[in-house]
Image (cartoon, rainbow over all chains, first blue to last red; front, side):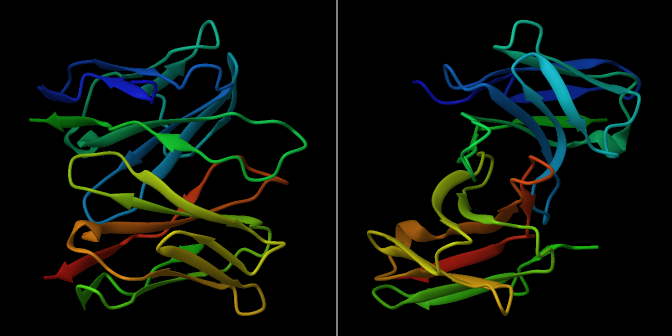
Length: 117
Length: 113
């Protein structure tokens, strides 16, 4: 399978614990995104990498959230001191972006469900 | 401020008929639009897209229409099949500024056999 891969698919954690999600983008895709989706809503943008550089962060990304893409390939999203409001599906996506090309299609992984109890 | 709106949370259609899903946007900087299909507990799957320089794009049973003056787009599925039952998200992108997609809240399509 050469799609976007996310791990784990499901995570249940106690409030206050730290969790980390991993995303492996489609090979050679230089752009990587993290989104969050709650029930009844569309995905909301969290952050975006071009290669290893984190270029944009949403205001939704509080200081308890940190994302990295150390070698420009896989990425991790860590949530520290989880709260019940963090319960959501965390989606990773990737695309092959070139400055001169408009509207590169963004492909999503299957998501990582987080439940904070 | 919802920049992409899908005002119909649900739509039911008979198998074989046309499904029309609508989407409105407010940000005139959006220049690329995408439709995604999502099953429960899975990530969104890309369906079809359209650039703002076009007003129609077709791919098999799926056609997307863009009306820039009305800031409106629609997805037509003909003929509808029971396997099309899913949540459909409209998303928009501005290549000149931010790089992220802005999504609507989705429309649950149910195709009845």
